[in-house]
Image 1 (cartoon, rainbow, N blue to C red):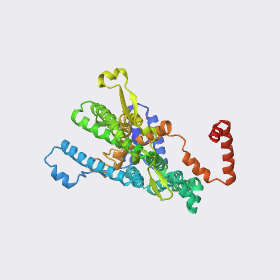
Image 2: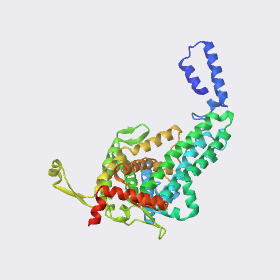
Image 3: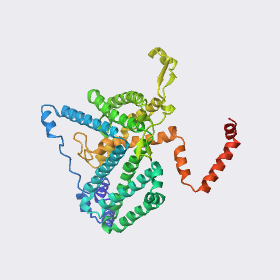
Image 4: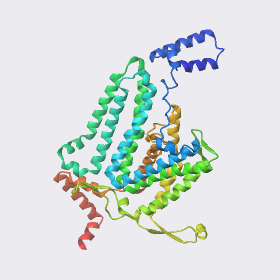
Amino acid sequence: MSGTGMGDLRQRHGREPAAARDSEDKESESENKLDGETASDSESKSEFGGSPPVPTSDDTPEVLNRALSNLSSRWKNWWVRGILTLAMITFFFIIIYLGPMVLMTIVMCVQIKCFHEIITIGYNVYHSYDLPWFRTLSWYFLLCVNYFFYGETVTDYFFTLVQREEPLRILSKYHRFISFTLYLTGFCMFVLSLVKKHYRLQFYMFGWTHVTLLIVVTQSHLIIHNLFEGMIWFIVPISCVICNDIMAYMFGFFFGRTPLIKLSPKKTWEGFIGGFFATVLFGLLLSYVMSGYRCFTCPVEFNNDTNSFTVDCEPSELFQLQEYNIPVVLQSVVGWKTVRMYPFQIHSIALSTFASLIGPFGGFFASGFKRAFKIKDFANTIPGHGGIMDRFDCQYLMATFVNVYIASFIRGPNPSKLIQQFLTLRPDQQLHIFNTLKAHLVDRGILGSLEDA
């Protein structure tokens, strides 16, 4: 317990005996010395052990400042956010057009920037303690985790290419061992960096780094996995979160009256509910449009002959129009008995519902984090919007849900991956699997019926 905390305790129990107070003072002083910090040092620091980050200044471009100088701060913020939102949406469409490889590169860049913003907050809070190797080890662990996850992705989706190149085949075979060795090296470096007067703070930052890696790197890895299932599984969820963010802001700006949550005083029930209905409708319409194009619905695969990505396939039943009966209760309202729609549109309702009802809690979590450290934004990268992490706090939560949803309700066994692995086995192993499969098909009567035909 810090000196400040002990002072609060003494104020609440001011009538305790003098001997007890003396004993408590000695105990507090002893505990603070163990952490290399006297009571006076603790009281002079902020709640989290260092000087609070300096509030960000106005980062609005001068051109916009001059153009919007006659508006009130409320409407100025409206226009700044609106203009830059349109610019970000335009950029989003451009990178989609450029293809999967560019998308993966952008996801990695966003991940690194988000990690940098969160780690920088920790460094700003604790920099006065001059913790040994804090930033060096943080970035080293980021490198290790990215090596592990991206190595797994390369082995998974570029299997034939990996087997074709000798260096890649060796790296793939011992990938997990190499990853573990790299992590152990960082772990030993952290232990060696421990100094007596900063034990507690150093373990705080060790935990800080690993939680940041869990939130940022793991989720970006899941985003890439969603992308390989088909561009539609990448675009629709991200677009639903963007739509919900915009529509909740719009409804809240014009109709908001009732506060939603104390962590975000500007969030209102009107914005939350309006954003939900708008996002579900948007998800249905966007899914209908995208389900008709193979470039969005086909899984992203790597063509070993051309060394490029392909998105050409025969659309699954998920992306073929089907006729559904409308419930009798609603037939009199809409005037239809049946409706033709893609099965994926039904799944889009689940995606947009999560983006509207649960996704915002990622933003609330980020708001609580920023309030804990008395900062407005993670950074000032995007004028009117804060840092990259301020824009992607809900996206990471959404990525996990989409990945779990696909694994639970969509994805089945992948024959192409099984065949790829089968072809890498020794001839005797291949013959063993062939004979086992043949005996199984004969027992079920499938192989016999094929031979008779």
